[in-house]
Image (cartoon, rainbow, N blue to C red):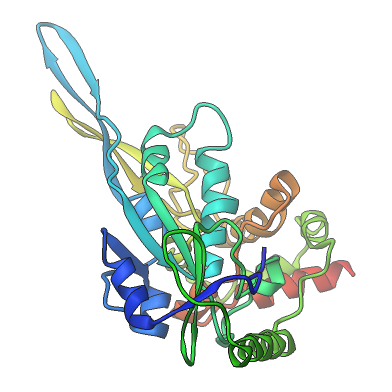
Length: 318
């Protein structure tokens, strides 16, 4: 759902005061673009799926193991994120952790306590490509409220904040913004991209595409949709089961107890990352596993570009 134009206009001061009533965070992209006075987190994933958390504790006593699951923790949080980051929650994380039984109780508790707002983007950065994967910089889809900075205040859609109707000049400003974004929006990937990539699994081009990637895993930790994790026991006779983020870029990610590793080569891991986001996930869920935020492109230490990788593989299939 794009902005309806039926919202209200509030002053920046009123908007900030409303945000300040609870425990409020903003994502790093929102903090960088709009300089809001709230603590920043890298992405919504940081709140919903902490990088490290204990799931249960155990100890040995009286010749038996005692295991005590830790209750899910979650306090009400308001998070203001970019539309693509909201889409990462609703399209990917929710589908993974809430879409099938049994649901993850820790994620479910945090998600229930999350009041998620979308702050519209007024321009495309060089690394942004949300429109290539079904998103839009002014999308409110999945958000509890939507806000957009205007020259005269803040445009707001949602409940909890009252304001005045849009003036004619503000409507013209919104229309001009929509038109400008339409002119500069990156075009969508071809409709059959998931099928093209799936069919290209065995092609030789993957070696060349993966050559420049370090397999450092920075992209997966920065990504708002990557959700892979590892479970490890800490302690011997007393300790805890710890869940930590993991990455398909790491050599030991698929290492079996038998010492067999089905993805021992860097090329195989790069191919898996691309196919999972742009082929396997859309073929199963109907939406891309990437939201086009561009963080992996902007922060890659060797400037490896996932957009170019997808384009090159797809071009081989056309």
